[in-house]
Length: 405
Image (cartoon, rainbow, N blue to C red; front, top):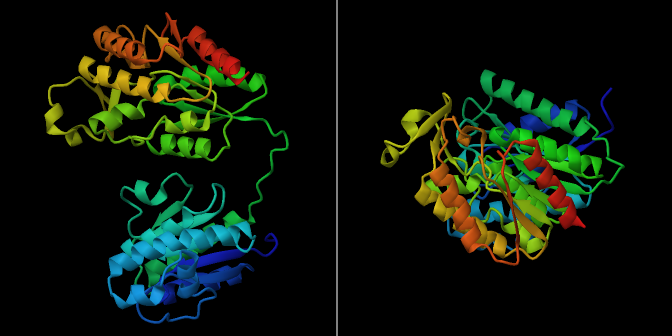
């Protein structure tokens, strides 16, 4: 037996994709849920009747829709509606009028659908069937939990392939809204931690100490998206402390790697005044794709093949000086209690003595740059150990607990 009736927003350009969205809406009805058709099209009149018109969507963003459509600039229309739709969706969710959302689209439809979904909180069911789901979807997903399903064929009519994909997608969103999430009644304060495979042991050991002290630890994989998501939750006021052991995303930002979290990485905790500890974890490595995708300008550098799809590049002493300065300047802006911890024997598994990225000159350049640029008012702790050593993990956790007061 399905759970009680839920309302699922079926959002799309109902002028060009009305038939496809109506097909999904009917599947949702068959599952005994209620579809709420929302039109974000700006071309001809919708081919099916929406429950929420494009005019209502535009109004949520303060847009003069008639003037916008009169200019007949499709790109401008998509941008405007993708900015208005999140406002409407957030309002509908806050009022309890929708329990999930699904959308289908090509380039413009994906921008509109995912734009609307990014206005919804993490944990709110979101499904996007897209022609672009097999490529780099970072700019569509952002820091939200959007489930993207490749459409396989274009979202252009109903055929044996599209009907199969749409049916599975409709089943997915219905299953999501039917799944009840058990609430955590312990209300333990949240700690955000950054982790890579090369710092897993350190974060796991620190996490256990913090959990024993009564905190719940959310671990974010430092893959660009992970860092962005962590920063978002900190900025949203959900995080009480930050265990920032893995700041590697800044190496990718500096050198053009694939896992950058952008230039605002490390900003949120400082602005929010959240107690934190920061270490230079994995700043020895920059991430690229398969070996042949590494930019030609880096030929001759020290590379480590992590797997066929991931190539790591060792940072040089010169780059480490820049990274140390960036870290120090970011941390100097923190308004809450913050400490910097340096594992002087290695900053990752593979930068330890005898490993592929062992380069004491580069590591020392990093440490010296941090120390010379860090404000004297900020606590700096040097631990003569590798980053995954038990004594370093313990120092990180206990220092954060001290900062949390």
